[in-house]
Image 1 (spheres, helix red, strand yellow):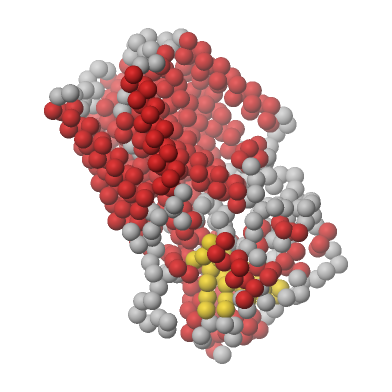
Image 2 (image 1 turned 180 degrees about the vertical axis):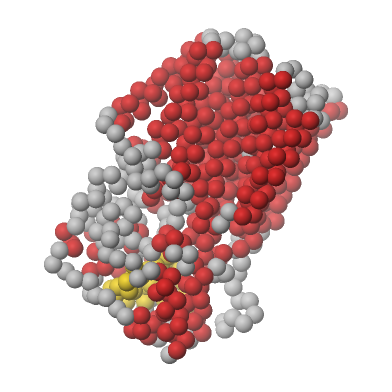
Length: 100
Length: 463
């Protein structure tokens, strides 16, 4: 096991711990937007896809990468748009015309 | 580290911070939207940072992918109805996981078909393609079930766990073989093929009511695939985002399992609902239900001072969210107080019912979760159950023989009066008889939920 791998493991474990802490505070009210948000963030595979699509090493890389970029981009764009649409709807009451 | 590398790493670090801040903002509904916009900015930074990567020499393929993905993603995101959110998220998982799998396959191909890969990297690549591939097919199956292309009932076959277990062991075997000999094409492609098959086998036997757990679990797998990609190509932002996602998905699936009082393993291997249909129909015989006319129900609601509405997925199926809000407004106009009781597994994914009601302009402070609302049922004059069944079944508390015994439920039976809107006396999604309907204080209002609610609104207005 190389030193880099060890550091990567540290990063992974600490990030998972932070994730657990942060997410256990999300109220069940927002669990659907939470899932759609993490879904959008998991489209981060895009970063790996971009490198493959733009590499000069082989045409296979370009093609596989291009498909991967498309898939990941659908994931990212769709995910963030939907999350925003949902969060926009959550609002407090007490607007004009409300008897309370 | 040269200037270019420094710039990339700075972009990735900023992206990671934005992701965490974005998720943290979700603990407050007022700040959540702004926070997630920061997370989107983080994603943009990660993309821009990657574009200056020294290994990127050609941009035409990237441009094609980015444009195509955006062109498909935006209309998909804007048009999907809120009721279809679970299947939308399932299909979105499939896309993200497909990207991770393809990156993994490409990495293996480019490095001399595995010849240039050391064992440590092969472990990461193996996890990446394994989790990626099974998330792709698993999510597609979940999508099919939620979209009702595939039957929602659990599909089972003889020796099911044995065959699935066998395939699972075979996959692990291939993985181990691949780590010993990374350049073995047979092991590599067989492992991916088996992982695709396992994704199908994992979701087939799971019923529609258990979908919230499965979708959360696939969410977690998609994250783990992304994290493994990070290990394989040495990229920290992938590891961090993947870990965040993996933790979130796992936490949600555990919460969902708890809300159904079932272990994780039981959801995955139990094929719930398959053989329980005839289990407890004893309470049904000899007792009759009391049905009520819309006029009487309207009077009861109009003069109630505390009303709790208990929505279930049936409400969304009938597209009745807006009418329910209209009814609540009418009751409030007459001085009554209306709250909504949201069971953790109401709907087809965690928190689904909240989104559907928020869409119908119900202010979120009226949407109360189970722990908050349960003590309030005793002071409530009318509990109005719309399209919910198993989550209000007192058998979960009283009847040890019931398949849902022990599941936390909404204490609707403690309310002073109960009105249940229901199409017919058919059993619920899980096929279990509900004793609540036979209680003396329960009145049944039969008919389509939307039509009944519309009728109630007109009746109350006419009073």
